[in-house]
Length: 342
Image (cartoon, rainbow, N blue to C red; front, side, top):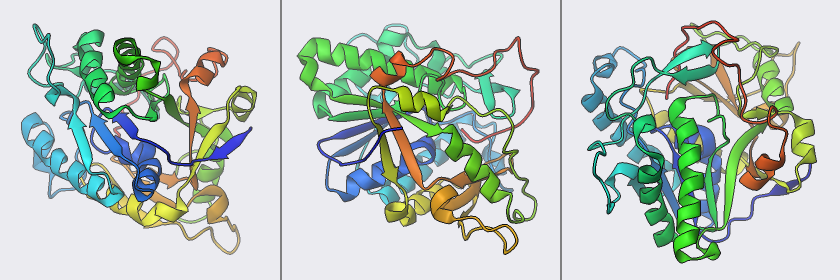
């Protein structure tokens, strides 16, 4: 696998589905780019109205879409400040020429579980659900952002949306269409490269094994290192065969910023802590497997890896169709009721 350490240059636009995704998926990239003094914009497609809520203090927000949306806006603002990001846009707030039939706001579409760590569409998405917004309507708004910022890099999810959430998958589709529209309007130089966040399979499994080397916090469980991984995890061999380099973003230099941003999303993220390694009997190197830990609403401990990884969307297109962005289908896996923040 050929890798290239990130070298911020020019503007960055990161496009994510819900508040907290910007930190969980690309926190180190955003903080690194901002620390280099380059322009950084985060576009958020919804306000996470359907998300679960962690903790008794804020439990009353769950199920109250408007109240939860308003609260998650404040969490997002705190996270972006921690990461050093000053430019933020909600996609539905971007003026559009054609709004006939559009909902007033793009809302969290909700989801269901196919299997542990693999999400699918909700049974009954809300009328304003992001997945129901016509592709070109959403993409036209994002294209306006791209034409105004003219970024060197646009970052988002791989085709499987990280773990299959329908809003994540739709966000990937909207990004690709928006780039087409922006380039068609203002020329191919309007937008530079499109990067998709991935995790090498070996890193995903080593992180899980590292966590198993020490007892989890009270009330938390550990992930199974050997269970099927979500679409964001790509076999190392597939990454090695891609024509372009895998862009690597070291997390350690911006870890304080990433942890502060994670803590800002208190309705969605808990138990944020630095990773000190395994026990004396089962040592684990933080630099090789994990630099921090956290848990979502499923109470399963997760690792913050030592690096974020990104591949060019063109390289994903050249990869085997069943190797990237896949995941079990509804005919293959029984439904599982395992909540996760989104």
